[in-house]
Length: 74
Image (cartoon, rainbow, N blue to C red; front, side, top):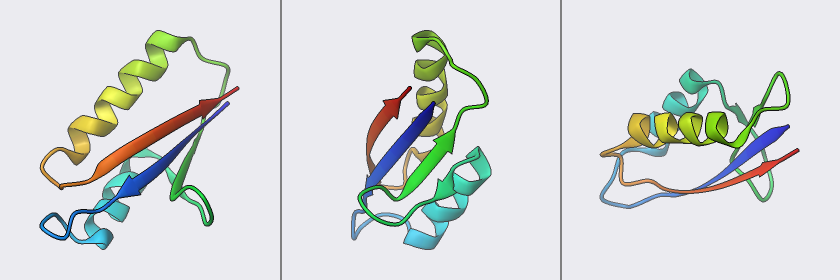
């Protein structure tokens, strides 16, 4: 299972490098192409766990001006 993230950056928000480092700290790997980051789940996970994880991502990036788009695929 993988969760992909597209990030839209605000010119009034944090630098791209700051957001990049925060995403790596959470466990995301950089990706090139349609998505900026990917999170590789160690196991198949139920929806509540995915939602809790995504809530933590949003909390970590709060105040950065980043707009996030998540896609999780089994």
